[in-house]
Length: 322
Length: 286
Image 1 (spheres, each protein chain N blue to C red):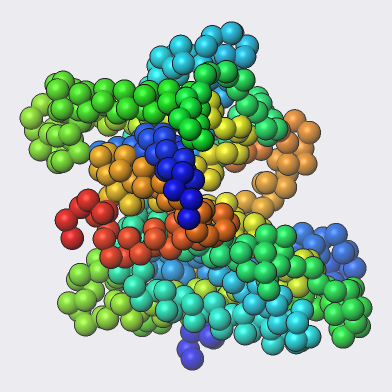
Image 2: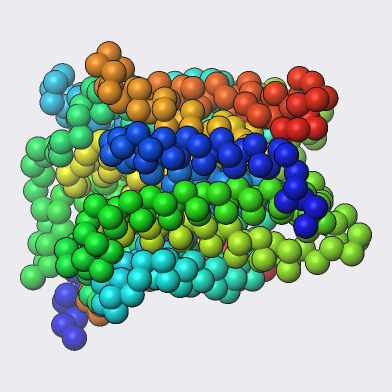
């Protein structure tokens, strides 16, 4: 694998890892909680970017896979006392399988129709889970505290979840990079630019798109399983929250559509900005208005996002900044 | 099964369906003319609710008399929104317009939350209700249907009988050709966005006379509008009205057969199936 020796990838991975390890070395639990959310957002944004940035299919309801992974993982940990790592992997597998099966018909739709269908899928799952009593229905499920004993206590379980989310974030970034640099990635970008021409060139768009959709469903599901395991409870509302899905799209746009580092930068900037606006006394009331206005400015004037804009500035950056 | 229950819930669903149809027409008109899915639709509906609340409670105007003011407000809001958020990206890929209208959504919800907080509101409105045996139809429902039909009729008269309305249909059909015929397409697009907003706000005002509401009521109504619009065919106002009535009836009648909480599951599954197998809606050609 030649792409795995690329310095561009390793620098990004090392920076993310170094930042993620700060709270563990300096023993700062509050910062750890913040970074957990940030890493989760990086995973969500990078996964959305894999399907949206590379193939141009706007998966509006991508959060559905976060919820599916969360519920599958939670259920397995809760009822079968399964280890969270295994439960998360199964959650990821289930999400990928669902993405694969649904992707076959849904990815035939183009443009706005696809975006609407993904919203419908998310809402269908949310309302369905609300009705399943085995999954706790509308009130959700609460993890028995004794479950954490298997990991040496609640504190250790929370640390384990944190290491898990670091690992998933690094894997997501690596997958995003490898796809972009592979022949498969080139095929996806050909589909994005012109699906009919790509078909003439011998690409099977249906197969490529379904595979990408399944891959992009895997990582949010892992993140969901870890997140709800750490939280100790799960409800249909937060698990299938359409708003968070749209926020992930905003992060991708902010950082740079179709780039590897873009979603990471986008997640970081968005989360910091929101944190600042909510806690700052002058802005806390108007935080939605301000973030909305900023989003509009970016959408209207800086369409390439931060990384896309930097890449346009110099050929050197274009070479090393993916 | 009780026949009277069926009749009562059918009337209930039918009346609600007209208002839903009106609401969805706003969304479908904008999509039909400029291929933009307006994610600011929910906040526009909520704006209609709060406009009528402020006008009736703070200024003492009867909610129905306040409707012309709501219409003017909607037209201005829509046209301003178009020029601020949509005009620059009207030819960009759908993601861009989706996010641009979503930013409008964020700003409006943020502003409305600052002004009104998220606590539940309601209009106090007393109208005589109609009775026939055990079936009762609330007066507010009857008026809502009348107004919804009136607005729909006015919209059709405008689209088919006036020069400007014909221009809107021409731009929807083929913008480049319409421009070649000397139609100022920017203005027509802005006007269409304004009319779409008016429809959403009027529907919001009517819903406010029927139910309680909060600043956040728009989210659910927006997804409902998506379902209705897809059912009737994206961009087809007649279809939206029909879709609204179908959803209204479905929501009231299916509750007799299945638990209320399963109705949305059913709706969204139908929504996905229609998108997959009849993307032009139930009225459209395959």
